[in-house]
Image 1 (cartoon, rainbow, N blue to C red):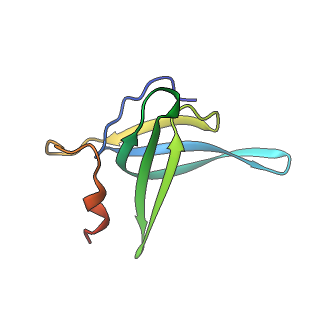
Image 2: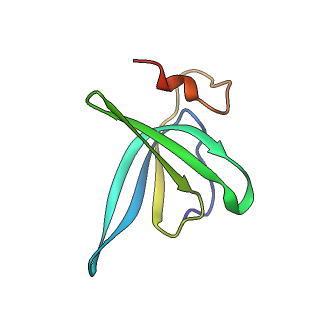
Length: 93
């Protein structure tokens, strides 16, 4: 579970998520750009988008989910981000 949110929209992050398969538990890593952080308090959620080949994949996680082990910030954008929701990145190629 994440204790603090120390990333912002536009950051490239690696989300380490616990996956339960039968009797085994493993960690799966999802790396992409944070598009949005929604709501406040216990309902806070964040959206991460990555592109694999020609297919874009978006995942939405609750911040306080017990399945999230950690979130690593890989990179900050080189320029200042002036929006809180970066949905315009969906249309860029």
